[in-house]
Length: 337
Length: 250
Ligand SMILES: Nc1ncnc2c1ncn2[C@@H]1O[C@H](COP(=O)(O)OP(=O)(O)OP(=O)(O)O)[C@@H](O)[C@H]1O
Ligand SMILES: [Mg+2]
Image (tube, rainbow over all chains, first blue to last red; front, side, top):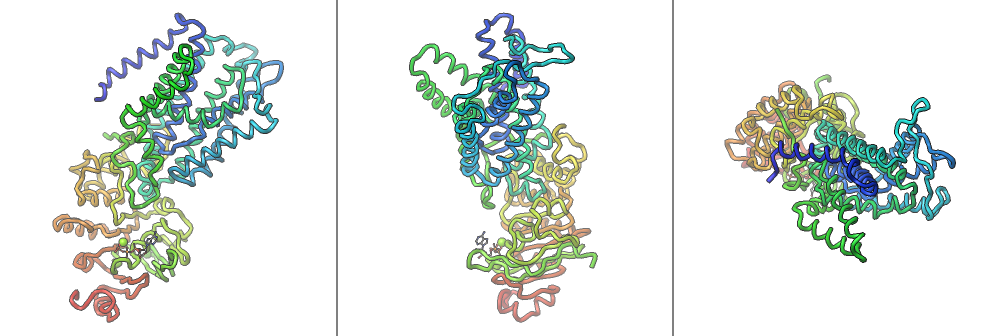
C-alpha cells in the first residue's frame, strides 16, 4: 500500500521546489493564503507530536498558538514594531511556562479526563483575555507594526513584504518539520511512543513517563507559539477567538484528516482543510455547513484516523489489565540494525 | 548485611475493607531465589506491586540495596536496579521483538532521553538488546512483531526485556503461567542461571518449579506470611500443611 520511498522523496522534493518558486508566479492573495496555511500546518504538526506520537489528545493547543500572538501584541510599542529578537523569545517563554503549568496538572489524568482537563484550561485562557481588560477584552487588540528583524541597524527581513513573509513562514514550517522528525526518531521519541503504547511497561523499564510527556507537551506548545507569533504579525490583530476551543478542535481535525502516524500527515491535513474552506467560502453561501459535511465524510472514509483518536481517548492506559493501543498504531515502529 | 538487595518491612495494603497484604516483611539476598507461594488471592501480586512501586503501601517500607525507596516511583526504582515481569504479559505488542528489548536497554542508558540521533542505531544499546534476547532464548524471533509470538514466547520476551535493563533485583510474577512443559523447563533453567550476581523474588504456583529453584521460601495466605525459611523448613511447617500445601503435596 505505501508508496516506495524513492517516489515519496521525489514528490516531496518537487513540492519543496514548487513552494520555493511559488512567489514568482502566484498573486499576492495566494501568497498570503499559503503563508497562513503553512503557519497552521506547523501548529497541526506540533499537535500531532502530542496526539499521534504522545497519545495525549489535547484540546488546548490553540491556546498556545493564540497566546504567542497576544504576547506579541502586548509587547509591541504603539508607534513602531517590536524587535523580533526580544519579542519572539518572550512569546515562546510565556507559552512554555503556560504549557508547563497546564501540562503538569492535566497530565495527571488520562484518556477522556485529559481531554476535558485540556479543554477547561484552554477555555481559561479564552476567558482571561475575553473578560479582562489586559488586552482589550472581547474586542481584541491590533498590532499596527510588524515585528522588526534588524541587525546592527540593518533590516534583515521586512515582515510587511508579502513575499518575504511567505519565505519566513516556509522556513518556519521546514524548521518545525525537521525538529519534529528528529524528535520522533530520537531516543526521546522512542520513549514517548513506548509510553503511549504501554505506559505501565514503559515505567517499569525505568522511563520517567510523566516527565517525557510534559517535555513533549511543552515542546509542541513552543512550536505552536512560533506559528502563533508570525500569524498574529500577518493579520495584525489578535482576539480571544484566536485561542478558543474551536481553534483547537480545527487543529485536531487537521491532524485526523492528515493522519496521526506520520510527521507530514497533519501538514497535508492543514492544507486540505484550509484549501477546502477557501474554495467553499468563495462559492457557496452556507459554506460552513457544507464544509462540516465534507470533513465528516472524509474522516469516516479515511482508514484509521478517527478510530485511532477514539482509542486514545477512551482507553484507560492505567488499567494494568489492558494492552492499550494493541493492533492500532504502527507509528511507534522501531527500526534496528 | 551487605548481600541483602531488597528488604521490605511491615508492608500493609488495604483495598477498601480487604487487607490484601498484612504486615509482610521479606528480604531478598544476592545470588538467591526467594520464592513466594500461596493460594489465589493470597496477596502475592499485590506484594510485588508494593515492591516495584506500582502500589503505595498504607504502612511499611521498602529498601533497595540499603536505600529507602518507599516513596519512590516505579521508574525511579527501575533505574535503581529493579526489574519486574507481570503475571499478565506486559510488552509492546505492536513493535518487533527486537524493538521491545531495545527499548528496555535504552531505558537504562545514559542516552535514554536524548533529543537527537537515531534511537534504533545505538550500537551499545543494540548489543545489549541482542544479548538479552539470546539469554532469554528468543534471539531467533528478533524480527517478529511481538504480538505474533506464542504465549510462551511473549513470557520469554518479557524476561528478555527485564534482562536488557541489567537489573540487580528481579521480581518475577508467575513466569511459568500458561507455558507448555518444554517451555517451562527452559524458563526454569533460565531463572536458575539468573540468580548469579542478582537477587530474585519469584512468585510461582508450579510447586515442582518452586522446589527446584527456591533457596528461600515464603508462604502467604490471606495477606499474611504464615511461614518463611528454607524449602525444607517450610515443608515441615504444620501451619503450612494446614493452610496451603495440603498433605498430598509433600
Ligand atoms: N486493585 C485492586 N483493587 C481491589 N482489590 C484488589 C486489587 N488488587 C488485588 N485485589 C485483591 O487483593 C487480593 C490479593 O490479590 P493478589 O492479586 O495480590 O493475589 P495473588 O496472590 O497474586 O493471587 P493469584 O495467585 O490469583 O495471582 C485479592 O482478593 C484481590 O481481589
Ligand atoms: Mg497474582
